Structure formats: structure tokens, C-alpha cells
Image (cartoon, rainbow over all chains, first blue to last red; front, side, top):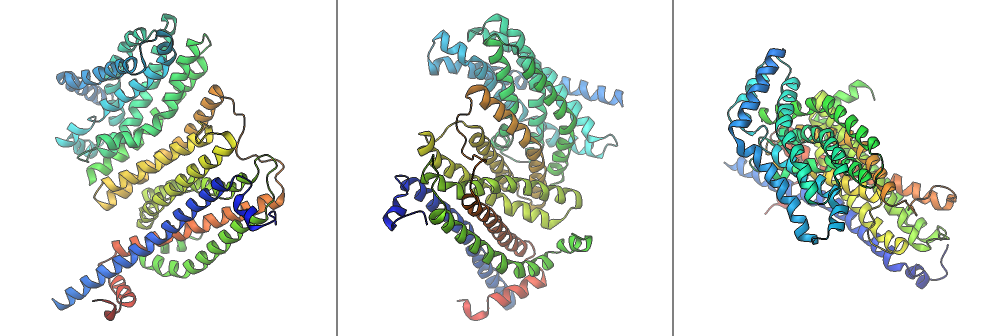
Amino acid sequence: MSFESIGDFLAMGHHGAYVWSAYGLTLLVLTGNIVWPIMARKHYLQVEARRLRREERA
Amino acid sequence: MTGFVRSLVLREARLLFRRPAELVNPLIFFALVVALFPLAVGPQAELLRELSPGLIWVAALLAVLLSLDGLFRSDYEDGSLEQWMLSPRPLAVLVLAKVLTHWVISGLALVLLSPVLALMLGLPSQCLGTLILSLLLGTPTLSLLGAIGAALTVGLRRGGLLLALLILPLYIPVLILGSGALQASLQGMSSSGQLLWLGSLAVLTLTLSPFAISAGLRISVGE
Amino acid sequence: MTWTLFHKLGSPKWFYEISSRWLPGLACAAVLLLVTGTVWGLVFAPEDYQQGNSFRIIYIHVPAAFLAQSGYIFLAVAGLISLVWKMKLADVALQAAAPVGAWMTVLALVTGSIWGKPTWGTWWVWDARLTSMLILLFLYFGVIALGQAITNRDSAAKACSVLALVGVVNIPIIKYSVEWWNTLHQPATFTLTRKPAMPAEMWLPLLIMVVGFYCFFAVVVLMRMRLAVLQRESRTAWVKAEIERTMPKRTLR
């Protein structure tokens, strides 16, 4: 452990703003990349399922 | 084969001279871009001389790119490209002949215009040899690389901007070496290293790009 | 890889089934490695004696830069397979990986510039690495833009393959010319990643993060590919069965 306290950890020795913004942005981009395919898949399956139902009825 | 290539070259040259606007517009563009810079940064002779290598090269690069936008368009529209694909001759040779003809006429005009613009920017006259040599060695690479993009985008309605987006990153080595050669000669150093590199890049693109261009044309026509 | 596996990979249905078996494991590995690496790098790794704690950005910057470069090579390999063996799945892989690779390049650039502020004092320097990374981003944009501009799916994939191959031939030339340009204009005074004298407790988390990023890339690309396969094969019986299975009647209004 290279930090004495939580406050120390958050401050990152005056570089807190840089370190945390870099990590925050990375987290944002990585989650976005994971969430987009999941949402797109869900949307696609819903649209297709509706289309199949329509074609069944017709 | 040689007779075939010759007739193709003659056809290209004739077509280019029949539409002088396509030949002249890139040259006007080249001069116009160079004229914009003194207006933007101020007329200080010292500053302009310092900037001139990069400036001339960026303008020349954009002018070549602009001239390539319509390289295959008319052939695509009138169906001659399809005839090329059907012909028993290798497509790579045909496109190489076409692109080189285009370069000999439009690229050479650009090279001949450049010393005038360079002198207006205050480039010393002993650098003009390097300028002409670097453009002579660099512009074939620019034409051949640009032809790859032109081949890939020929079927698209608004291919112009896309062509720039695809091809400009690939132009970077030529830009660095060409303006580097000019900068070296401006500082009184030898520029032969950069010129040799430009020459080897030209040989490399001359060998490899015809295949990429013909692959691109086949995709665009097949669509 | 044996040839039978290679041929099987050409079948979308087989890919869809096998990837659903690979995904959970890969996703678990990615989460585990990324969490371990981040905690280790942020909390336990010792402080750098020169740069202090800002050096901890290395644990995301370097893996992202790795992925940005490998991602483009992946595009070119997929393009080659698609052009030589006409494998549809390679087309899918190329178009699925391009946006992910572009995002990794963006990450590498942004974290690099955030790191540059405390170390160099400016957000951006025209350093050889950063400049080549920026050019790589433009190359990715070119592939993505070309893929979106061409409406026919098969020609779009083929055109992207050609462009990715042309790009990958150019990358070493661009890299060396940019490095040469950089040494000519401003001799490098300080480079971000110094290789020597990095103790194990510093580079081990870095290694974990790199592997974690690779797993993450694989997971996202597989997910995108699975969606693309479903869209391409939407008329086939197995896709209809899959839709029936995942979207039972009552979930629809």
C-alpha cells in the first residue's frame, strides 16, 4: 500500500485531478463500448420479433 | 501490349486537353492557397521564407488531391471502366498507364508553376533545384496513392471529402520528406537523403499501388 | 489452427453458437484482470520518483495504445482473409473492430495528453508517439467513413479491406517518417515510457492491464460481431429460432 490515508489516495500527491480524470474517462469509454452492443442487440431483437409476429399474422 | 498502352496514353492525353478546366483548376487552386498564407500571417519576408517549404508542399499536396477527385469518374459514368475489366489485359497495367499519363500532364504543370510561387514567397533561388526535384519525385507517389482513394470512392455520389479523409493520412510521409528536403536546402545543408527517400517511396508505390487501385476499381464497378 | 476450424468459422451459425460459449469466460477474465490491475496500479504500486503519482496513468495509457495498434493490424488481417478466402465472417470482424479500435486510439490520445500536462507542462506536444497515434486515429476514421458511405454491404466490406491493407503497409513508413521529423525538429528530452529500471511491482500490474484490455477488446468485438451476424442472417431459420428463444411472446406489447 503506497498511501497513508483515503485523503492521500484521492489527492494522488497534487496530481489527483489528472489521474482521476484519466481513469474516469477510461471507465466512461469502456462502459459505453460494452453498453452500446447490448442495447443495440436488445433493440434489434425487439424489432425483429415484432416483424416476425406481424408476418405470422398476415 | 506496348501498342495498347500507347493508344491508352494518347486517349488520356487527348481527353485531358479537351477539358482544359480540369487541368487548369488545380493549378489555380495551388496558386490561390499559396496566396492566402501571406494574407493570413502577414507580409514579413523573413517569416514567409521560413514557412515557404511547408507552405508550398501543403498547397501542392492539396492541389494533387483535388485533381484526382474526378480521375475515374467519367470512365465510370460512360462505362469504359467496365470494358477495362472485361479486357484480357491486366487491369493493373491499364490503371498505371492512366495514372501516369494524368501525372505527366497535371503533375508536371504543378512542378513548373511551383518555382514562380516559391520566388514570390521569398525562397532563395539556389533552393529552386531542390524544390523542383522534390516535387518531381514526390508527386508521382501522391498521384498513385490518391488514385487508390479515387478508385474506392468513384461510385459514391459525394466522394470528394471522403477521398481527402482516406488519403491525406497516407500523404504524411511524402509531406515530411518533401518539405524536409526543402528546409534542409534552405538551411544550406544537403538534401540528398530526403530526395533519395522520396525516390524510394515513389518506386514502392509504383510497384504496389496499381494492384490496390485495380482492386478498388473492381469493387466500385462490381457494386 | 486446423483447416477444419478455419472452414467452420466461415459459418455464421457455428460462430454464433461457439461465441456464446466463449463470451462469459472472456468477460469474466476481462473484469477480473481490469479490476485487479487497476487496484494494484492505483493503490499498491509504488510512486514514481520523478513523476510522482501522475505516472499511474500508465496503467491505462499504455494498454490503450497497445490495443490501438493491434486493433489496426487486426483490421488488416481480417481484410486479407476477407479478400483472399472471401470469408463473410472476416468482413463482419473488420467492421466490428474498427470503431472499438478507434475508441482505444482516442483513449490513448486523451490519457496521454492528460499525463502530458503534469510531466511536460502542456496538454499537447508534437511528440513522435502522440503524432503517430493521431494519424492512426485518422486512418481508423477513414475505414469507418468508407464503410458507412458505401451502401452495399459486401462492397463496403471489400473496400474497407483494401483500405485497411493499404493503411497497414503505410503505418511503418508513417511511423518512421514521423520519428525522423521529430528528431529533426525537437530532440526528444523526455519520453513517457521509460523501459529500464521499472521494478516488478510497477510493471506486473501493467502487464495485467494489457492482458485485460485485450480480453475487453475481444469481448466487445465478439458482441458486435454477434449482432452483425444476426442482422445479416435475419432471413434464416436459425436466427428466427434465436429471436423466438430470446424474445418470448409475453415480453412484447
